[in-house]
Length: 56
Image (cartoon, rainbow, N blue to C red):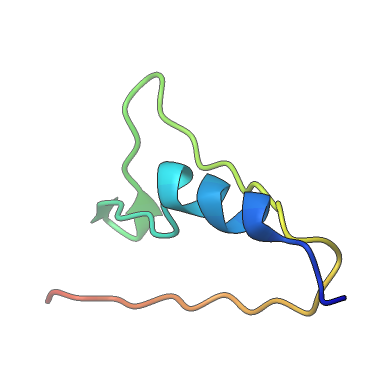
């Protein structure tokens, strides 16, 4: 039988997999209640993070 990680795929659909944030004067520009959280639902696998900067 194969790996059973269907719940991880369902949680990713609900939570999303991207975050878009403003940067002002070289710092993340969060509102007073904003934060970034990382949720891992698919076990301890090798991960990578991609940061894409768009703008001037």
